[in-house]
Amino acid sequence: MNFKTLFEDAGHKVKFIDKKNGKIKSSPLGMSWTTFFFGTFAPVFRGDWLGAFGVFCILVSTGYAVSPVIALIIQLVVAVFYNYIYISRLLSKGYEVYNTNDVELVKKHGYSVGSDAN
Image 1 (spheres, helix red, strand yellow):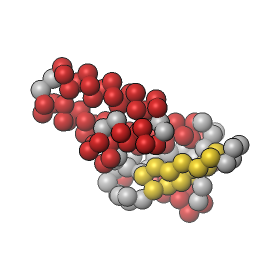
Image 2: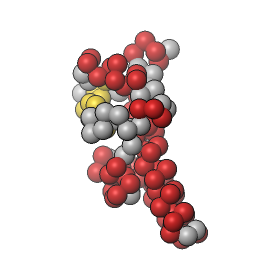
Image 3: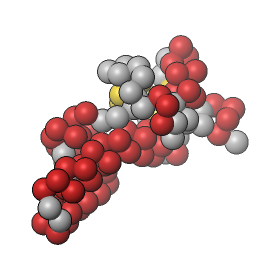
């Protein structure tokens, strides 16, 4: 993960395609503001059930165990890492960047794509 690019390219969505079945998914790069504001609902709407379960477990367990200020900080940390983890899992499942113009942008954010994956 490249922390220098965390807030760069805000709102830029990158599309990924699974060439085996033609499924297309998209995700913004950098921090997941939707996860910060809406918690578990962001992964649910993406169909990312593993991510939704993880975010739910983290936010619920810390929300009850610590003070509201610490829980807010933990929610911020989850939002910072969620898109990175989601995109990394898409790439590990065999998804490829749909648009060749976005390959360099994805590489700039610290992902291994194309010939870098080996």
